[in-house]
Image (cartoon, rainbow, N blue to C red; front, side, top):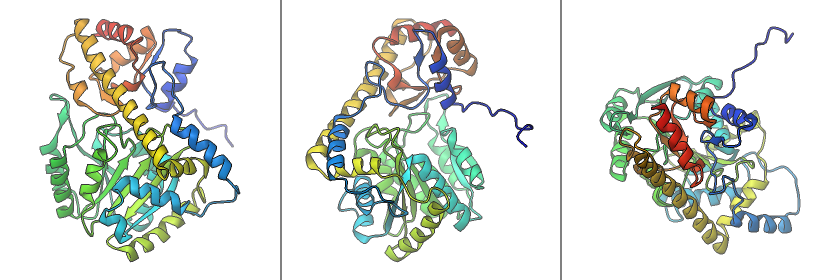
Length: 396
């Protein structure tokens, strides 16, 4: 019965990681998959995570199932991280958080919830967006459309076009925004633009859906939550999909969360009952270990302080690599103004490289970049930046 099945194409991002691992070239460079790397090209285990792991092991008394939405302590820690301890969303109890397997798992549960409870809604995606976004919603049977986000000529936010598109979206639809460190462009709204967006979304009667995967990688833990907290005006409804793969380095633990903000606590409890139905028919209940690590770190003042220092260190290294890349491109005489790379935030940069150039870089120089030209800046090191810029100069 399987003879008619054709091989599926490789994933456009994870498939590049597979090809990179298979490449025997000792000088190969991987700038594709969104994984943080240190100066040695390694993805380290954070010291805060190492210490928390020992505490979790000492305290653990059972490996029984978690509740469907996961640990209440984890949910509370996530909410405090997202909103702060005194935010009205937290004090009113109108937020309900479920532990999901990664940010992707949270997005899929959100998609299932929209499909079941908001069957007439279309989800609007930024153009461009993370390539897995449309796939997740399509798999859940939720239609998607795109709206302008990136001004390619000026390498900035197409804010006027974005606002004009919002004014044409049907009330009751959902609009997916990136909380910070937009993937793939690295371009975020300013605090004032977030306020304007919140006004426009609220006035149009849209449901904001926030993909919040990089908290702490742009400006800081609290600073990066400005968009989320601006959208969360009293009584506003919102869906937040957060991930702790990047800022805690817990990639293989798949730690994420789905937070639904309703108009009041009663509505949040009702919505949460339906979210639990979605989870039960998907993965039933979440894995425990990664969430215990996050909860332990966030609830321990010393570990929390250490973790914030480590996040700041990662953010600083990424920004340093942005500056080094631009400086080296200029020194190599590569045509064009690449200063926009230093204005972008987070792990990714929309480099402006074309698909043919990307393919040449892979075939001739074993440099792996997503076909759109998005590069993972965290994959750049002081050792590989010279050959990288030499290769870019050659394909211009």
